[in-house]
Image (cartoon, rainbow, N blue to C red; front, side, top):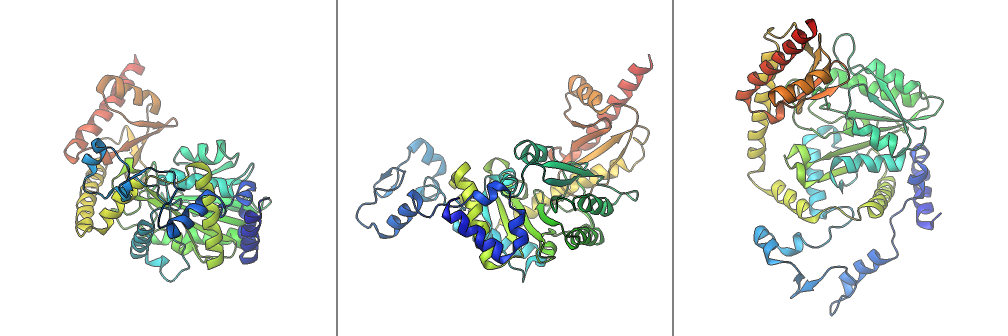
Length: 435
């Protein structure tokens, strides 16, 4: 084992043996190189005042070399803020700005030990880092039965972990904290579990209420007290898009100092929050640990980044930073929020009208981009294909009964026509089946 990896492991084990036990074999092996090209380049950048012949970029007249045809479209930006490599952990100014934003929007994180957010190539990359550091063959990853399908690829296929499911909703159509607790406690023999909490939920658009949030935290604490090390990951991809009286904060703060056997990891990003899907700017933040532990986890995270993508895209990090620093940012974001809320409210009002009750019911939703219909009479995949081929309407079939509809991408004035057409599709299939 590399001495740097061994040193990081010793620090982590000293600070919290439970967190060390959470690491995968890869997580124990990984480190960020302090001796080599990166460290020598950093030393030269500080001291080589005459010629710096270390960096793997091209310079011209003191600026990063660039093509005019590209710079003409980016003329508002200094070449040094878009063409140079971003540091592996991300642009320092952006990390600081995101940390301030996170603390402002999540009062429950204030006063807790909190690492500096590390920039990732959007949220999937952040989840992949968690998988690399903490998931290995046979490890349990606890998720609800209604989930983002990429979890299976990221944790199951890539890392060989076992996905353990529980029903998202209970009989009262609330978050099923008892199901979560049972799924966690079932891992007692393994002594470890990774739990993914995705609110607003993809695909249902559901966020628990404050009391439900407390039961989620209590379930995780019960698992920890039963001797299970819990890697508690909050996948906050759609954070901030809360349209009703649900939780308006991430549970990362409540999990941050819950128990020595619980490691709180917050995954979030500008992708959905700031409507910049193609920028691929996300963050991973560790919380509730000692400064030494946070530093060691950051080094291991940087090691994973260095070994996979080296560093994230600099231009998009610069674009997001400028947006966060703009005096118009809050007002513009509020404007888009109101549009999204209007689409969600129109969808719910239409579904509550009763006109479609013979064809479907819907799963509770109050946030995010999506909602899910539970079809009563037709197969979801059959309906999906029929809508696409006959009406030019795209939806997502999930299992036999569930159809996901993204109201986020439908103008409010078109939502009624959308659901009327879906309903007509159901009638078409029923008529065809009755012949």
